[in-house]
Length: 453
Image 1: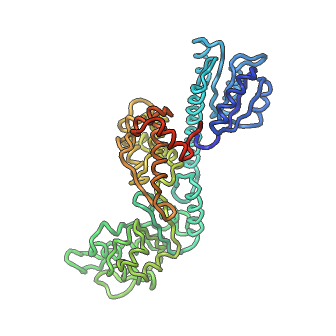
Image 2: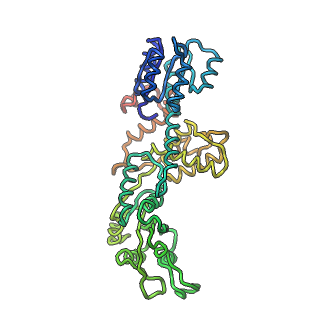
Image 3: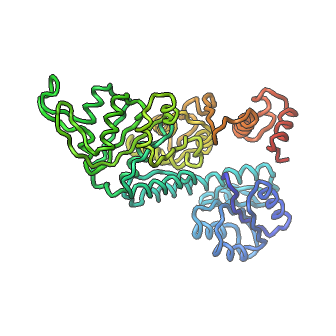
């Protein structure tokens, strides 16, 4: 787990408790200790833990009883049993009862560190899976947007506030960040939700076709126009019109759209009389419209009509806590669609997914999971099913954050951290991958405050 976890250690040997507590606290976790099983039972009734480390053999109540009680009270909590009397039978019994792992005394501290890390990673994945199910089952007026990111949650709060009005909204964000989904979310939470939602990508059509799609035409307006047809603006009467990639619209089309916004009416192609329109307009672009206005490529008057409320969607690389949630969401989607039986994403695969920079954003993540489900063997999606660009870290994206590009030191820190993760914390192996000696790596870790001793 990326944040501090709550760990309970139960052992009637004080020295063992102290050693285990030291390892866990050094990893940044909150540790509670008990030297009797009865005291641990009382604590489990009132407090929740992410992980329980318990001795197997203790007076009065043994570790198996603690394991059963934890599974009864806190089923998502991982339990690791530790014993000085390890046998194959006892290990099998512990695993069958639901223990995550079984460690024999005298234990090695590096073994404990690794077991704790992987156990907490499993707990995190299970909880994110549960949160995803809860989000999917919620009854909402609009479509579900999967997120636990604080910035995204604030943005959705603003979107719901704006939805209650008829205010025009301008959505910004890179391609693949979900601009149309956010537009549908606003429509679904608005008083127009019973009306139609019409969407059009302005960059997908030539000017003549775009005009016909938006404004419609009268019979005989051009060769082949055998009957009158309303455009998308009319079809969205009482509802919402979403215009994606509006910066691709020509200047002539911008003038026509401006008239619709100002006058609340349109004229079909080939017609002489206007038609009143009642729509809510949401526009979007991956371009910076202010820069487009400054460059003379977008009309300033239209920009100010559109940018009444601006919502900026962040790239997926700035929402890394959402990657597991989204990955499991897409996993379920494609498992159901393909009839496969892939139930989990292994920790190594999830680590690769979270380390990737996603130049294609959420759309790219969805494609990656679809590919993974199609190529998966067994019940887990493994890193062998992921594209080489993820597992080999061949694609990285440099983005501005808070209006500035990252420094070389920040990029170097990120890469060193990634290589250490991929090498399992083995500094000798990490130094080999980085092409430096172990002493140079140690100096860099010291320099960047990454050395944990």
